[in-house]
Length: 230
Image 1 (cartoon, one colour):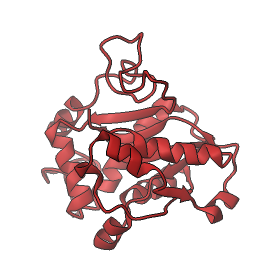
Image 2 (cartoon, helix red, strand yellow):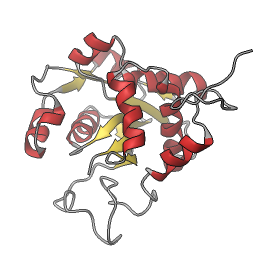
Image 3 (cartoon, helix red, strand yellow):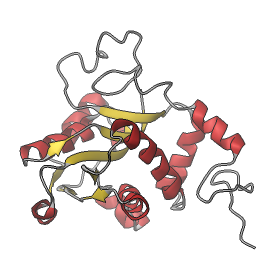
């Protein structure tokens, strides 16, 4: 008889692609406290709800909703297993996290089109699969949410994002991505394009992708990421 197992500790669970109650309690404790007590642009936690965070007070406009705090160890470890250790089975679990956030932002998901940020060419060669594409396809297959692969890599950056400082990351994002013209022709521009990525650091990748979509005539909404490094 097949037994469902916790995605983290391997103990028996009632539902497939889920965490056991103990692991779920730990994971939930690492979420940002609320979807409202955040900067209205980048979703970082705020001391005062009246003001934007210092990073966005200069006039940023692209909204990003991040679900988990990257400083917390439990969920970050699962993310690293997924991205760097090839544990592709985590895709279903993470897709449920994105789904919950999407439903909070858009109770009616019918106008939404998911636009995943592609992984680097180097990561794709090593891993043989793209984690954000996996999430988008899972949500389409299981929950009927449309997706479009409108963003494509245009150049290979020699330095990984994590080795760069804030200014270098923002600069590196410029010109890294472009619009996939074949996908663009097939995608209804009246739909709400929601960009999906795994981690937000400076937000430069999200801003670059949203700007590309807007410049190509697409309607954009709040981007969603699994974790934010603050």
